Image 1 (tube, helix red, strand yellow):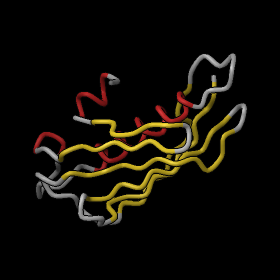
Image 2: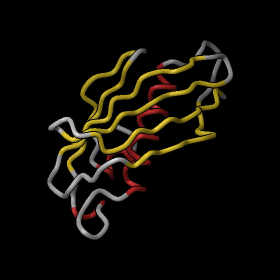
Image 3: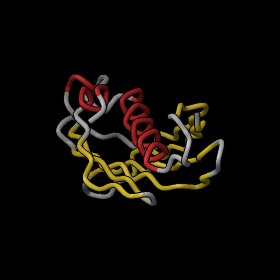
Length: 122
């Protein structure tokens, strides 16, 4: 697990080249007031998924990846104690950039956020 992902409390549940899935339990330490998942924590969760998905898909000869753009639509709250699930799927996988979309939902299926990010292949 990546250090920041571990700090967030992320747990990867599946990973392949076409889809990464992770979950985290919303804790008070990553909430705002009222106690719902902080927008920055949502963005960090999605960014970790997108970066990891790109790493899994790096073309031969690439040395790494970095986020160059990210857009988040916040669509609903995730209260403390809720488990959220992030599903990250590819939109574009090129030699120089990759674009990923991450759907973050509650365990009950309520959409919390939709994140689209572009990763540069290094």
